Length: 274
Image (cartoon, rainbow, N blue to C red; front, side, top):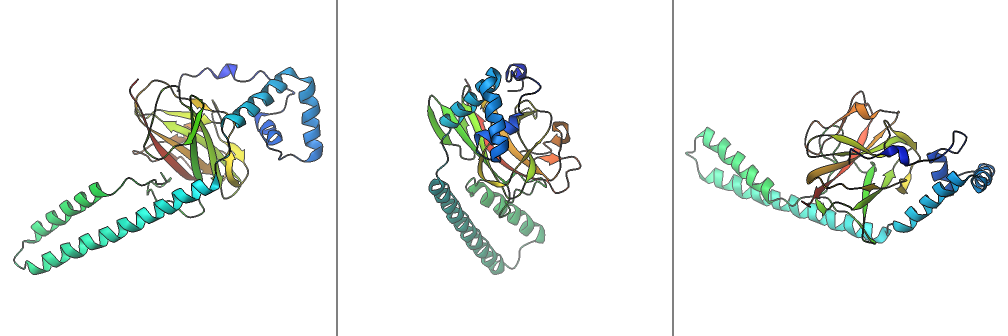
């Protein structure tokens, strides 16, 4: 994905509307006077007519997410977390009772047993979706930014779950939930650690976005044939930031140099061997 030719993605002239302005026009977000001006220009400009047609085809390929399906997923995830907390409590209660009954136990053996029990418990936990937070805690804060990844394969469209298998040729489009206006960027991290931009496509830095839920980001990314684990990160900051400011210090984590107030959300995908 890091070898895309971005020079062919736009044929606009310098006096044509920006990509963001066309996105807002297509989404019906512009004031009436500004919308009319963009419409008049596009009617006389073949390049902008083609750019609008591309957005219309993209919107048709990725229909709006059903909020009831998203709500059902959240309910199931919350129930799964409650089961894990109950199971963890019962495991440690039984472990403490056994330790109390065994009085002549060396302190070092207790520490080793506790470590082993914790490792077994973690291994038994289900793989839950989590935020790859800026601080690497993996804790999703209520009301924080969220990343939704929609896959199109052979005409079939579905939202990806964390850890889902994908393959070469799959097209990915991104939708985000933003609690406030912010600078945003979606990047991917390959198994080699290389970071590549997904939105804005081919950009060297973030772009401004308005607050809202289920915001469809323009464009789509087509997966290449490199196999292995990859992470997709939504990075949200109060100020503009550059691609070179981003780094992946640990598996599934994202950091922004000088990024005070930045937050992120991530999803893990597994690319199948061709």
